[in-house]
Each structure stands twice: as C-alpha cells, then as structure tokens.
Length: 233
Ligand code: BJW
Ligand code: ZN
Image 1 (cartoon, rainbow, N blue to C red):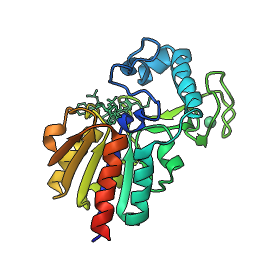
Image 2 (cartoon, helix red, strand yellow; image 1 turned 90 degrees about the vertical axis):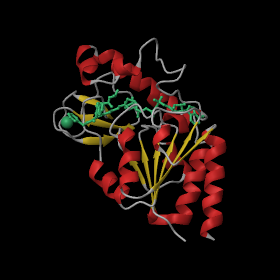
Image 3 (tube, helix red, strand yellow; image 1 turned 180 degrees about the vertical axis):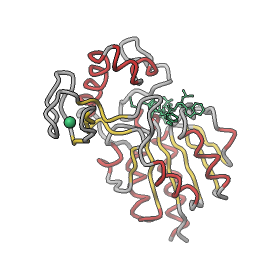
Image 4 (cartoon, rainbow, N blue to C red; image 1 turned 120 degrees about the vertical axis):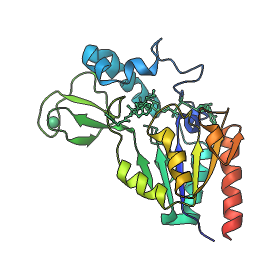
C-alpha cells in the first residue's frame, strides 16, 4: 500500500558526509555562531565575512559525497514516486547527488546566487565574495541564495499543501529550533498524519512525534526505508 510521505531533513543528515551542523559542538565557523552570519543584518554590516562563510561552504561541497541516509531516501523515491516529497532545510546538494528528484530547498541552495538588484536567481558554483557581475543586470549585487533569519522560506505553500494531505511525516537530523520547519510536526499531526523523528539525540520537538528513534541517520534512515519497502511489496 502506497502512503503519502513528507520527509523533512536538517543538517544532521549531512553530518556523516562531513558537513558541520549548526547547533552541535562543531557548529561554529571560525568562532561565529550561525545566528551571527545567517542574518540580513550581518550581511549588511560585514558582507566580506558572510561571503567568506558561504564561499568556504560552497567549496567544501565539492569534497563531500552523499551518505547512506541520502541514498536510502533516493531509493524510497523509487518506491513511492510522486507520493514522497523531501523538504530539506539544507543548502547542500547531497539529496540530488544521491538521486532524489522531488526535493524542495526551503532555506535555499549554496549552488545558487540571488541578485539584490534584479531579484534574479542564477545557478552558481563559484565564489561570490569577489563581487562578480550579475548575469541578469550586470550589477555586483549577488548574494548567496539562502534564507536568513527574518526572511521568508521558499515554497511554503507547496510544503503546507503536501503536509495537509500526508499520511506520514518524518523529520531527520534537525534540532527543531528553527521555525517554520519546527512547526511542521504539529501541522502534520493536525492533518491526521503519523509522525516519526530520526535524530542523533532528542530534539526540541521530540515529544511532539508519535515515535522518536535516536541514532545516526546513516543507520536509522536505511533501516526505516527498508521497513517501508517491505510494507509496499
Ligand atoms: C544527527 C547527526 C547524525 C547530528 N544523524 N542526526 C515562531 C516562533 C519563534 C520564532 C519564529 C517563529 N517563526 C519565525 C521565527 C523566527 C525565526 C526562528 O525560527 N527563530 C528561532 C531561532 C526561534 N525563523 C525565521 O526567521 C524563518 N523565517 C520566517 O519564519 O519567515 C516568516 C516571516 C518573515 C518575516 C516576518 C514574519 C514572518 C527563516 C529561518 C531561516 C533559517 N536559516 C538558516 C541558515 C540557512 C543558510 C545556511 O545554511 O547557512 O537555516 S539557520 C540554520 O538553522 C539553517 C538550518 O536550515 C536551520 C535549522 O538547523 P538544523 O538543520 O535543524 O541543524 P541543527 O544544527 O540545529 O541540528 C542538527 C540536528 O542533527 C541536531 O538535533 C543533532 O542532534 C542532529 N544530528 N548529527 C542524525 N549523524
Ligand atoms: Zn541582477
């Protein structure tokens, strides 16, 4: 029996690929907490530092690969097809590189640039700190195409439509500290979906899930996907 599944992923799913999370012990970048670099105010105050943060992470992407958890979600899409939507808070491209196609990046993407002048969005795999010209308008006003605190996440309408028709909501590797993503479990519950959390430790929202399993995503996600595959046969 096919079920409609919404999977929300956070930084924890990419941790075993070697990418740092935000709020764990390794969550500092050159002594900066994410809240100090991931805001429009920080960007206006000190664009060079914020560009360096994202240029470093964009370069780091080239040296990492999807892990067993990303690969398992791509296998799940083979089984569920259109009935699976992966909503990621991550700005890396590891879901896509694992083979997932139905992925929504609600906090934007490292491999995209956004122009503050013309609002164009452009595929981008180079540094932004050296002030390249915008391919749309020629101004040197490109910024990382990511969603900072106080900005509106992408595709919220699409995500909310998927949540209200879901049978199952699964959150993987996210601390439940950042809204609106942290509120999705309540929205799914209200819609009558079952909810499952797969996370290394208990999160700020663990108590809201029907089932919360603790361990590394590289182990828990393949185990859960194998269970769904067995039920779908
Ligand atoms: C493992 C593991 C392993 C480790 N296996 N697990 C309602 C209430 C209160 C506040 C608000 C609210 N609504 C909005 C707000 C304000 C704000 C907010 O939430 N503030 C909080 C601090 C309280 N939210 C916003 O501003 C959002 N915008 C918005 O709501 O717009 C509406 C609006 C706008 C204007 C006016 C009015 C309304 C935007 C939020 C943008 C977040 N941006 C960032 C940066 C993105 C770019 C980048 O990557 O640099 O997104 S911040 C950062 O946090 C990043 C992440 O996507 C996000 C979430 O972090 P995540 O993924 O959960 O990572 P961690 O590190 O926190 O957790 C990792 C977890 O993995 C841990 O639990 C580990 O245990 C686990 N783990 N290894 C499994 N191997
Ligand atoms: Zn432009």
